[in-house]
Length: 405
Length: 234
Ligand SMILES: Nc1ncnc2c1ncn2[C@@H]1O[C@H](COP(=O)(O)OP(=O)(O)OP(=O)(O)O)[C@@H](O)[C@H]1O
Ligand SMILES: [Mg+2]
Image (cartoon, rainbow over all chains, first blue to last red):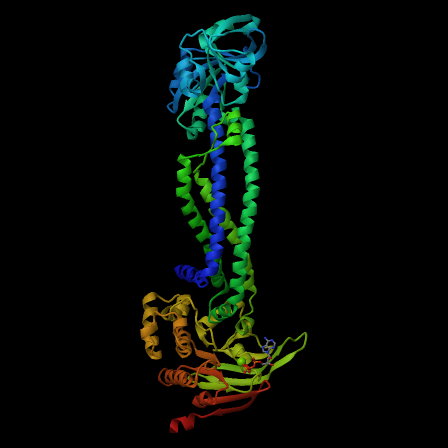
């Protein structure tokens, strides 16, 4: 085998210029494709982490059926048993209780439906970093009787710091709920939806308002990273068989669908790119077959089997593709590594758009290994397909014709 | 025993369109140790005959027995293996594999035969010695003169210890001095190691080095002269 490899390797360098040109096309194609993939995946993980770290968390526990019907009566009583069961799962780093419901909010002369979220201020802050999103004012303290509102909601209701907001709604079992709350802070929430509707308050104040002492709608649970989600989800399902355990994927299906369709559009562009590259390789292989006919005839005459010759030429085809792939990957790693830590900032309109959507206005990159080996795999498969040409050609080669050529 | 025995061999190219009768009933036998040349005008069928003897092409009709084996009965892969083990080939040009060194070229068939490395190297060294190119063993073919390349081709053909060597106009691309030199080496191998050579040629001087001269014309043998006695006298 090693002698086939040696022959194939030397053969591709017989025509240095041609091999370099073909290799260069693969090289630049790979770099382009790696960059595209890296930026796509980088922005997806930015979206995902924005949503995971600003609202859903990695995992949540609810009363069964809550996610489909977010209603305050679909809630559960929080107790030390639940707490200790969660504490037993070692992957879990932090968890926090929430009571979420909808009600009406009125300021001086405007009324609007809002989402009220009762939270444990210090714990919640560790997960969703609300204090970091403050535009004005200050964050809630434990037992606070004030509220934090989204910036667009504040604008709509014409609220400033220390203004009072009236909340009117329905508590558990149809009890009526009403209260007045001073605005402590205004946040810019990355989700436009929440920025338009979020009212955040201390969980105890929230439970009082909705006549729901000790009642939660959700427990938000964090693990170290995405890798631990599946395992922890299973553990949670095991411990809380009576309840609804959801991971961030289940809770953010819409976003994931959008990401998938975006990926699909990337596939089309990459596909076109690869087809162009493939034609370069095909051209080279066709030329190799034409100009080496006589040599092949000699090799078959003196006793080389057709399959042995096919192996050599197939290796050449693979080498021509893979040299470019390897070089492209090696060249793109340091560049991507740089951009991984130095995202490209957006300016002007793009910056505004990103800010409006609640994302950091920068192009993020990813160095997910699949971005790299995907290229290698695709080119490898392409070269195997291209290899069909020499395979058929050598199989059909008539020795005496080859010798006469 | 005859290492080659052919009877009533005909070859018709393009049978279904415009047929070309390249060989018209050839009977020939060759024994071990022959040094035979096939001569004849261009288009007389020399290459066609050698291709059939070498199992590179099939006769349209007739019997071809090589080392007692009926070549027409062998499948493609078996025929390849047969060629690899029994027949050595030297072609007119572009004989050598350009990406392999002289040494690697000579070892190539032995490698295909699965001969162990030490044995290969030992035999290669002997052959390099015999063709007088030991000092060029690490050169690529394109660094050698045409004559040197043909000597390497002879060494490569010998490496697999074939029953005989077929050479189709081995000197056609060589100057007369190189041609003579190549023939001298072939002749020496024939005399000292009893290697069988069958070669075609146009060249009178090359022809005269042969011990047997077979002349064909229009695909027929018109004369077959053995000069053994004359050679022995010299
Ligand atoms: N593959 C082929 N297809 C059709 N005709 C062929 C083929 N090979 C040879 N011929 C014809 O067969 C005849 C004999 O050709 P061959 O090559 O055997 O002659 P040759 O004696 O080797 O000639 P030269 O001295 O020019 O090499 C010629 O008429 C040639 O044109
Ligand atoms: Mg000829």
